[in-house]
Image (cartoon, chains in turn blue, green, red, yellow):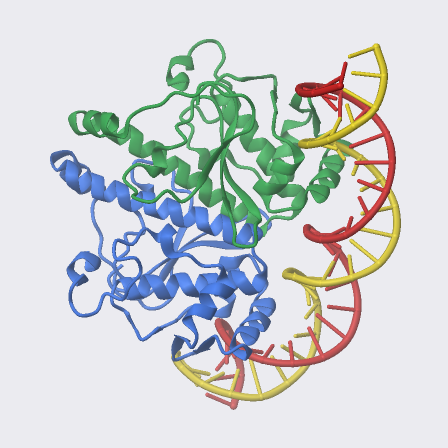
Length: 201
Length: 201
DNA sequence: CGAGGTGTTGACGATGCTCAAGGGGAGTGG
DNA sequence: CCACTCCCCTTGAGCATCGTCAACACCTCG
């Protein structure tokens, strides 16, 4: 993903869709299907995207010749797995209000890590229906919980984007600890040009 | 894990525990922490276990010298990630009854794959409290759903073990499709000695 | 202008949780 | 050998969170 938002999802036998993952610019959504014979999840765009494609064979060849690259790619899939683990926790034990706050925190931190958020605000093309599918809630309940978050002056969220009005409060509400994202720069914004090159690729 | 059952878990800020994964004999529970600086989940034994340990450095060295082994290990972590994805779906969209049925199916299939289940029955040292922690339900609701599964003559479950009385029915109840486990032998029992060596290591 | 997706609100109902209590088995200490 | 404890399973009653159904306003796009 070069530009735009995408997500992976699976739909259950009863036709309910669960979003597993959001992909923001800089992500490699399909690495997880490498080496696996059967594809078990679906990739969808959320906003208009610019996508780059890489041949599986090219990755294989490069990673066999350069073990360091192989390790880096492997590490990337391990982080994806860590995010899944956190999502299991999120969907499993947290109440709706926290669940949504947690999701907002994750998106914000990840966008900050790639320099796409300034001042705790970012673009947010994810609809309430999609938040519902990501959190295992109904869209109307998402709507009500978002209103609660707004009423508590934690966020400002509309078509123009998401802004965390009270970052500490939002983290607390979402029981959010960015450790699971395994960001090398610990979730600090990647501005000042220091970490950008590392984050962009 | 050489013998016995174990699991990984995380506990949320409110003190609720979510089990992320069950580890059965033959599993490599800690591969996911390789290459990651911070450990973000906890490993616990469920029944008395025999455990083997491998130095991280040894794995690094071997995988740098033998790309095929590296790929196999990588593949193994990718399968772990696929299981997490399915758990997100399970916890996210399925009702309690299906959720539990799904979990039972997974354990049974994985044990069959390593030759630890005959005739759709296996050892099952996982308590109802632990099923609850794995499915994001309360233990009393697990108890009631299990009774429902028993009443529908799908399972027989007690201290002596788990038996699927109606395997097709149980799969249907749990909305279970073993594809996500990416078993090479498609979940068929590994008896007749054919696939055992592959499964044991 | 119509259509469709998104956000919003209300009313009602159900799935699943909490609290509480009790029984049984296994291990422990007297 | 018997109390005692602890864990696990079980059951009941009441309640809360969250889902479903429905309707409507708004916006964008064709």
